[in-house]
Image (cartoon, rainbow, N blue to C red; front, side, top):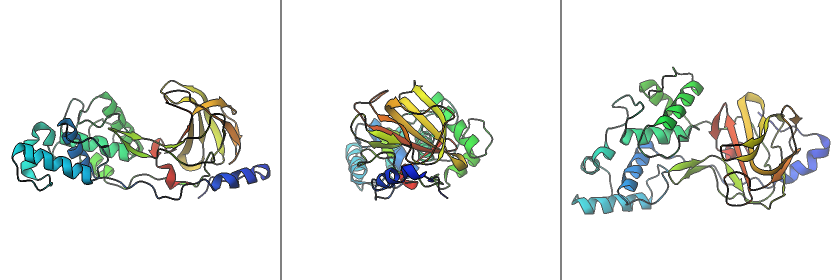
Length: 289
């Protein structure tokens, strides 16, 4: 399926934008159990990387250092003895209890990571199930067609083992130029889109045909923000704009101007932050470009 249907005057601009689509595949997905281990090792001051769920060299080194410190056989594998030595951060196992507000532990870290992977980040992945995690869980349950009770029981955990959502439409890149930060784990959270580090004032174009759902200031950190609603539940988000060139309800086609790049909201410099969402779940934009 495609959301790209351009009018004749926009064809050349859209073609130029298409050339800027990054060729690399989207980020690989990690394992919730490894993410929970990384959270525990970070709390011990031994792991400094992002909570990405990938058992890479940094994670293995942190396990080995912890085992050496605790006098456990050093094999860089987080087996039962290592988990016990981690104390409350190493238990309980995933799926051994329903998770609800106020709980802490290994399984909570794994749940927070899985929610972020499926497009519902809950703030820091830290093993503490607070109000933000509860809100993210309820949003996921509603999205997945589950009973919305804010408790992660067997049904919710089964749903989180399904394939992560992807874009169901094809789009053009909203600006020309290289991609900087990509979608995926960043520190203890999730970077929910692509960043294009281009100059302030650069023209930003609609990535596909749709109608403007909102256009204006966002108090949550996006600054000047345009959201375009497309077919099949897809929306595209254009954040940190210096100027906005569309109004709510206006319909656009790929290549139409929606604004210009800026540095409004929570940002350290001019760039376009570009997101895609499927029925409210953030998805890797590289799956749709």
